[in-house]
Image (cartoon, rainbow, N blue to C red; front, side, top):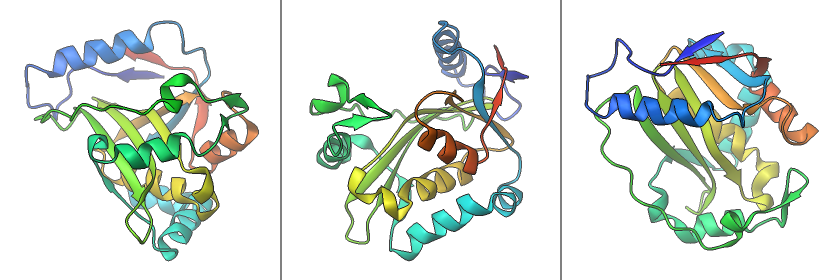
Length: 208
């Protein structure tokens, strides 16, 4: 399948659209992304939730426990994000890299005038207001790319990541092709998570 990153009918023809698309295309074309990619084709959110019962129920489980998800600026939540990053010494069978074990610094996102070329940052919060998971999405024409996603190890049983992904995807412009790294990357647990969300292995060509 082909996924277009460049001009889109919904673009506002902002000067930043083309450079954003070109940077994203260059990142995806480095050779780091061996096939098959983990892909979710998303056209209608109601139909998606009806089809993926496990993801829907687990997201609702998190809501029932008082968790909520919403857009954030990571720069406003450095302490909580650092706690998330250091809540487990290993992820996916590998030690956490220095980029996660050091205290992070984040720049604020610019104002993106185009709904189809932007970066979204999301967080999931407990009923007491603490951030316990975060997600960064690149929206690039037809593509929605999961750039970074991490949850606090002490809250994963609450199904916080299902809620985080479901609410973030409900806010992206549709239709969209959602890309979440390589399908065989990580542990069996990660693949189970992605497949319950509807991701499947696909060969993809990125086009400007």
